[in-house]
Image (cartoon, rainbow, N blue to C red):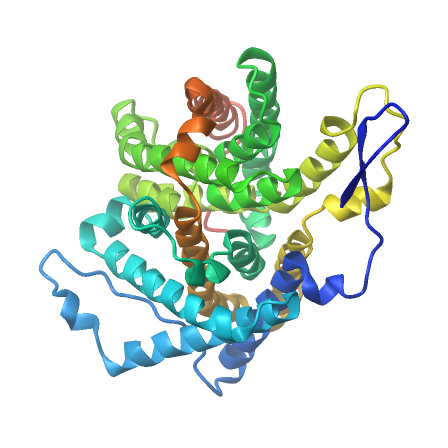
Length: 455
């Protein structure tokens, strides 16, 4: 996308002409191809049983379990497989973009070693229970970038959006539309009605009340708060062309409050006697991260965990729709100059739309309507158990890159006197109240029959 000026000297956003080379040179499209290569190989491995494509995963250690117990030739083999698969795919992608392999490969190798360190630390019993690896990934990156600094030779591998876009495409295969059937209109009412209302509320609160000038930051933080934290923040950030510092700040705030809510929300729900059904739905609709939702739901009981994960899964489906809506809104409203004669075309909206979202949708649709009916629920679950670790490795690379690419001074500047923090707190409180009202209306049993989760 380029910028031109009209006769009044105003900057206008215009669309570059589509080039076929975009399909293999742009991050968005490359993320789609990389994601589908991993999905296809993983699915073939599971469905045929011909080979094991599983990526490496550290077992939980601590609490009486020695960290040395999990180190084996099997783990080493899977670490090598994970490194080779992701290394080859991302190196090939960077070569197509113009980055020589001799520059990228050594940098990626070191970044992957940092990712191994992150996943090992986050597997510790207490850390694994209360903090997700995203926290440690950002922390490790921040420590390096704000102490010794990031050397120039490592910078070619520091590509936050590239890794997480590929991870989101892989994640799409796990977002099944059958979840809507499992929880029906109850889940839709809690996840799909509340979520856009919260985003709209936070947008007006941020722009009109707090008067935050950085609008991409507002929409990125609003989407992270109302949908599913970091994944949604990436999608909205890409659609609004948010800066890396906007993304870093949004993710940092989201992770901080996710940890607090994961610990205290189940305690409060239990104290007020809300029950597992309503409590699980409240957790699923308000805690940002899917992993944290699972942990918090488990603290209330098996039913609460099931409901919490269902609500969050239904909410996750919104990522693509919201990214598309943000792209349209920012192109047609936010970036359009007052009084400008410039008309926003469909081509400009298409240009702004994050293309990896198409891959996310495609993976979800294929899993939901082709693989699931043909191979069955167990096969899809087995495929996702393989894909989940590749998604996690891509995300760890991304969040470590966020830390490496972030300076504390930049975060301080972005805080704007605490306004983004106030936006999140007020928005999350509004989210909790609105979600509670929806949960009470739909799941209290006073207005509608309760759902049969065993169906």
